[in-house]
Length: 124
Image (cartoon, rainbow, N blue to C red):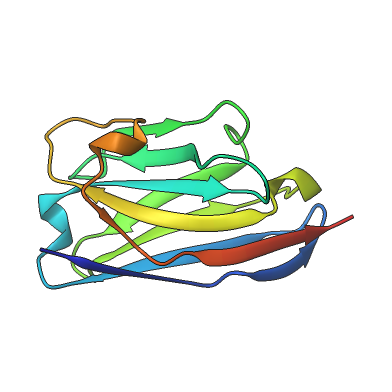
């Protein structure tokens, strides 16, 4: 079992940047496909980005493609989400998740472990 803790959220102006991190403990992160999801007020949780176990393959939601970058440092047991050109509609609680499957997946139900989330607020 792995425990996930997100950090780095906060308040940023539109057009700004923010990097959120997800630190894992309990098991080595390289065992898992990792994903980021987000949930805005009054909306369902949605997929943002995912990265393969070795970091070579990535997948992004169309709403963030070209603005967000997911990366991982397995030696540090940490996954990152670099968010650039932020928009007010990016405001949400951001969750990292771990999937012990072999392939990248965008489906929330495929992920086995979840962090508690970190709030990102983008002001206009």
